[in-house]
Each structure stands twice: as structure tokens, then as C-alpha cells.
Amino acid sequence: MSAETPLLTRDAAIALLEWYREAGIDALLEERPRDRFAETAAESAARQSAAGASGAKPVARNDPAPERASAPAPGSGPASEPSGGFPAIRVAVPDDLAVADARERARSAESLAELQEVLAAFDGCNLRISAKTTVFGDGPDVAELMFVGEAPGREEDIAGVPFVGRSGQLLNRMLEAIGLEREAVRVTNTVPWRPPGNRPPTPAETQICLPFVQRQIELVRPKILVCLGSPAAKAILGAQEGIMRIRGKWTHYSFGLEANQTIAATAMLHPAYLLRQPAQKRLAWRDLIALKARLAE
Ligand code: URA
Image (cartoon, rainbow, N blue to C red; front, side, top):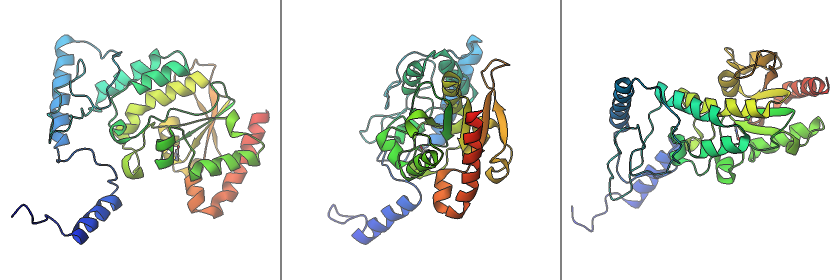
């Protein structure tokens, strides 16, 4: 093929881009495809054998995590080879060691400011590679009411603040309807990085991020914790049933707290779902009334 011959016609290139967009691919990371499965398997094997050889438990690393590292962090596997002249992106391996490392790091934070710093330095979740910002949380450090959603969307990723897009605006109106100001409420997500194309976070991504949101709940220690939608209820409250069955029911959140310090917790329909199914707002309204009564107790 001569240098002048285009690889694709303009229409074919547009059709290909459109197909990528529909598949959820909305960010170009590198020019050439990489076999991430082979890379992560090799890294995982190297880390497991290093941990086995030293008999050591994973320890918290204090080195700040570069967004796009060209050298491996201590204890991690080999760095990815640079490809196409682009700096290599080091891919994290979300195995048990990485989850234990995340737990240890999160536990080391004694305040929300410290936790935010620890999270900003954490490179164990690959979602951060494509996310623009780390969406930590919004609202006061001490709050009676705390909401946890699933993961940031496009608007949240741009702003670095949870629930600022259409769902967030509906959440604000829901709060107003029961006489609460958004500014008085702590809001965060189970996963602090936007999954590409707004796909749901994978179970491995959720597991690795969980220690950070758990620590955030522990540090805020609200009177009432509300999970928005099924994924948050499953991850945070260990709910086994779908949101339609568990919404409006009350339980206790106790992870990381002392036995006598549980937090009253419930789940509500996610505002994004209510935007798609406005008829279900009547159920949300019932749950809001119950929430208001519970806050007044
Ligand atoms: N949906 C969520 O679950 N969280 C956000 O922050 C925005 C939309």
C-alpha cells in the first residue's frame, strides 16, 4: 500500500469511531493494543512469589503513585514496556494482596484530609488511568446524613465532585423536599473513579476501592447512612436482594466500628433510575419521608 493510500475511507473511520463510542470506548490511552491479561498475570505471579519468599504481609507504601509510571513501584512486578513512543502505563493487579494493601492504607488515615491524600496516592485501581479526577467526597467532615452512590459519571469526573450531574441535581431536589440542604450532607461513591463509558465498575474494582469508602464512613460516622441504588447497597451493606426489595428497609452498618457504635442504614432508589422511571418517584418520596422521621428521632 503506498504512503498516500488511506487505511480507511473517511466514512469507514467515522463508522469505526462511532462503534467504539457505542462500546464505551471514549478515551485514547495508547496507540497500539496491549495484552493486559498477559501483563497482569505476569505481575501477579511475580508479586505472589515475592510475598511468598519473604513471608511478608503486604505493607502500605507511602510513595505517591504516579498517574503514568515508567518504573515499577517497590514490590510490584515489572514495568510495562513503552509502546509506540508513549510512556508506559503501569497496570495494577487487583488481587488479594492489592486489596489487603488498600485496606491497610485506608486504615492508616486518621482524618478525611489524610484519607483523601492516601487515596490520591493509591495506584491499585486501574480506573484511575482513564479517569480525569479522583472523586473523593463532598460535604462536611461531620454530617448526620451520608449518601453513597455507585461511581462518578462524566460530569462528576470533570468536576471532581460526586453527584453534580443530572442525578446530583435530582438528589439535591429530593433533599430540599424534606427540608435539607445538600451542603449539610456528606455525599460520596463506592468507587471514586469514573469507569470508562460509564460502564458499571467490575467486582474487582469495587473490592479494591471498598476500604476507602468504608474508612470514609467510619471517619464521618453519620447518624444515618443511605446507599443509593443496588450496587452501593450490595457493596456497602452486603445486601443480597435487589433494590426494589430492600429499599425502605433499615439495617445497621458496623464495619470498622466498635460493637456499640453501629450506624442506622438504608437503601433508596438511585436518582439516575428515577430520571429514567419517573413513576417510581412515589416510592422515593415514601423513603424520603421515613428518612426525615428517622433523622428527627
Ligand atoms: N451516579 C453515581 O452513582 N454517583 C455519582 O456521583 C453520579 C452519578
